Image (cartoon, rainbow over all chains, first blue to last red; front, side, top):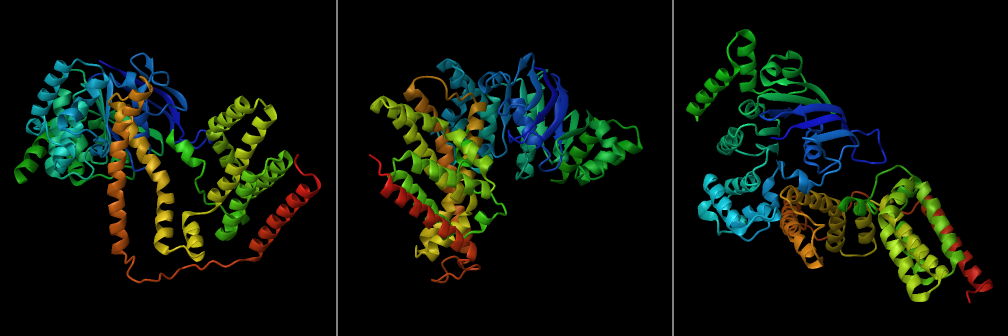
Length: 275
Length: 246
């Protein structure tokens, strides 16, 4: 399974203004099995970092390696064999006439055989509750179905590393929970890793085991999620907008020695009971 | 990719004399220079006008933008030079034709660098263009960079799913654009509806004649700029009279 190392990466969108950096000297490693929560305010450079990992952007300085391959030298097509990315508003990428075609797009690009594609498409469609819509137009689906289809079209590629940008923006509770179960389902396979950028800390706490905080293009903190909750400086002041649940968890674990996973579990059960 | 090309004509807000000029005057001068550029074949006239364009670009602090746009247009400049050379076998001809192209694009580019879409719309309206047309024109100008960004987003999303535009023969490559163009059109049409709703919500079309927050009025600087332009034309006419091109 893939290991990603980000080594002293700086990035500027304007090639001629080399000091106008969106990211500055970021170093971080994502190991197999890591589920990293990438936090930071709007405009802090989260999406840029995700695009750099995916190879859609190339670092102005420094290197990103996926296993041993340098992303500056690899094409997105090469990188996409190991890493895949779900964008914000992924429904915008639909083009095919049927859901089946939409789901097979990535596999066709990889040159898989027809029967193999058919088998995989039906398997994933069943898993995502889209089987009965296979011959419908993706544009005729409801909002939630569209979101499921767009995620299924990435999960079907079976990446080793999944990158997700703002997965819960604009989603209601039901789809937020669906998102959690999809991501957990993905992480069930051993040594797959995940990087998720979000403002939704409550959501993040339920899927991540590591966290990294960026502010103004700099990596200001990284470590385990649990230790993040104990970081008064970062967690409760300024950079992160903490929500009710995350503050509650933070308070509970900082005042006692209870297990973080257990607290999350209990709160989850409680909230599900309320809904 | 798409962005570089768009940037060649994108407005950038700066505080300079040229930016502050009346958009009608700028439009007149810019179109005037472009027309002379199309008519003339005289290398001296082309050089003279290009120098003036460079002065205007420098005054409007847009030299960097201009150089970048030239870089984006290199392909076309070379294409013109090579095709001219191949058809006429004359190196001078090839140089003159590409220089003319540079002159015409420079004259139009400083106009777009220094004139905001709103100003352009206002100029058109005060020149008698119906307000619906000028609004449609302004909006479409304004959405070019937005659509270019959108194009990049969809392109990225499909590349992640393994789309490769650099593979296969011409037909295959053209077909490979469909997964980008379809979502792009869907999004553009959706946005169009949104904008027309937003316009209506804010009362657009409620009154037949729109009033304006700012009325355009010629200032001293505008007259000076126009005078310089007329002087330039006079010099070119005199040059023609005394040194006609054979």
